[in-house]
Structure formats: C-alpha cells, structure tokens
Amino acid sequence: MNAQPQLSPVAGYSQRSRDIAPFRVMELSARADELERAGFDVIHMEVGEPDFTTAAPIIAAGQAALAAGRTRYTGARGLPELRQALSRFYRQRYRLDIDPERILVTPGGSGALLLASALLVDPGRHWLMSDPGYPCNRQFLRVMEAGAQLVPTGADSAYQLTPQHIAAHWNADSVGALLASPANPTGSVLSREQLAALSQAVRARGGHLVVDEIYHGLTYGMDAPSVLEVDDEAFVLNSFSKYFGMTGWRLGWLVAPRDAVPALERLAQNLYISAPTIAQYAALACFEPATLEILEHRREQFRRRRDYLLPALRGLGLDIAVEPQGAFYLYADVSRFTADAQAFCRHFLETEHVAFTPGIDFGAHRAGTHVRIAYTQDLPRLHEAVARIGRGLERWQG
Image (tube, rainbow, N blue to C red; front, side, top):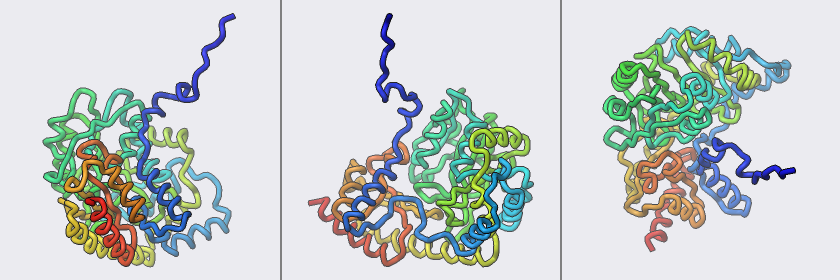
C-alpha cells in the first residue's frame, strides 16, 4: 500500500493566501505597541485611525440600542432607517437624490469593497488603479482570483489616474478602474471635471467606475464632489470610520446602480449575512445636528494639524510635492535621505519612537523613497514628533 504524500503546513495552504502581501503598517504598529509596553513614549503616525474617540451622541445611541435588545440580525442590505438616513445625507450634502434601495450597509468600507469586487471582477480580469494607493484594494482582487493593474502615478497628476492613463493601460482584461478621492496615502482630491473625464474614459471602453469616497467630509478649504454628481452608474465605497469616527464599529456602505442591487444583496447574504446591528443603530445618530457639529469641529482640528505639519516637515528636508486637500496623511519623498524607506521607518521607530509607514505598503512605484505620515495626533504631540524627526535625521545622516 502506497503511503499518501504528506504536505507541509505551508504547502497545504492556498496559493491565494501565500500571494497576499502583509499589511506592513500593522506589523510596524505592533512593534510600536511592544515599545510602549516596555515603557517608551511612542508617537503614532502610522495607522489611519483618528485619535478622537467616537462622538458621544453615537456612543449613546449604541448604548440605547443595546439596552433595548437590538441585537438580532438586520436585513442583508442594512437597516431601512439607516439607508434612508444616508439618502437624506446625500440630498443635504451633495444635492443628490439617491434612492435608499441603491444603498447597502456593509461591515466597514472593506465590506463594500468585497461586494464590489465580487460583483464586477471575474478570475483573470482586473481593475486599473493608481500606484501608490491603499494596499487592501489590490489584495481583495487577488482573493477574487482577479488582479490590479497598478498604474505608476506621480506628483504631476497629484498621484491620481487621468484619462491618459486609462487610454495607455487599458487592455482586453480590463473591466474597470478604482479611484480614491480623497486618496490614501496622498490626500489628493479629484475635481468634478476630473471625475467626469475619468468616467467618460472608462465608460467609452465598456468598463465600470468604482470610487472610494471613504475620506469624504475630511477635506480642508473645500468639499470633495461625489462621482455620483457626474456618473449615476458609478459604484461608490464609503465608511463610517473616518469622518464619523467609528473605526472599531466596522460599518460602511456601498451605493450601486439599481440593476446591481439584487446580485449585491445575494452576495451580502452569503458573505456576511448583515453588518453589525448595534453599529447600525449607533450610526443613526451620525446625522443629528449635535453630532455633525462635533465632527465639523474635528475636521477643523485636522486642518490645523495639516497646516502645521506640512511646512514643518518640508523645513526638515522631506519633499512633499502635493499639498493634501483631504484625509489626514502626508506622502513624503525621502530620496534625499535614503532609497530604503523600510529601514528609514525602522530607524525612527527604534531610536526616536516615532512611527510612520514605508511606501512599500502602497505599491511599487518609487516605494523605496516614500513614506506616509498621518497627522492623527494633537498639535502638542505633532510638535514633539517634529523635534524627534529632526533629531533622528541628524543621527541617520551620521
């Protein structure tokens, strides 16, 4: 009797799981936590999570829902009351009439991306997306046995795709393009005219346009237009994590064309059943005037942080070519100092106890000479961070 071959634990796992790259910022954040447990004062500028806790009215709404026993599943598309509240929000903020039936509430913005990628991309096909860009976008496509066609972008286009990029990189396997506005890691924002031109370029090729609007609300001196203002057939990903400050509640939403909703609902039923019930009831408080007043005050705090940190880091020699109009990140070229951004980040974490993220997390294009720095700490901490970075640069240069 022939013995059956024994697979090693690694060989027995899927190729898919082996292809998924680590989210390096989380590894770096874990090391920062180790240093804190050892007694060091670490300034966290690595993770895209605001330092503010969830606003009190939202917490109170969640507590009230728990007390009332609101702990059962909701429908796969989410609470009707929350989808209606989101529809009103689009009317008030964007003057758009979005039918609540087109809105699906999801487990975080990641749940919205999961649905969109499962719906739109077959194995072997791909979306175009900018390099640099949010890393999980391309990893979701890999899970679907599809892929990301990463398009190198630079400061000349504010690290955003253009119609020229679409024309140059579209091929027989392309099924759409994923944009982000405001973008992670750069904070750049697409204008209404740019969104319209990109929509036309994708539509002319029979593709789908997907737009990450997760950082809407966190813009400075302007409001970001929604792609739905120029393309009612676009797919929009959004989240309660950033502007609404509900990171750990894991709640987002997807706006889709009407004819896509039945298939998306089937996917939701099978992939996750429903979004977290308590989080959905809590999110109903997001749109109350008292909550929005708190959130707008926090937006102003982020603006003040950006306005301090941007010139301060430029003064230290970091090349930040694009002033971020949204989100809470600075994307800095450090080629003056290094071609190894990972070693550069490790240096500052281990010697100065300041954590920020190497460019390799966001793609391949010039990744070794870029870092992302989040201004998710208050101004006194940012002042201290700048002092430490200045000292660390002196040590780095020897």
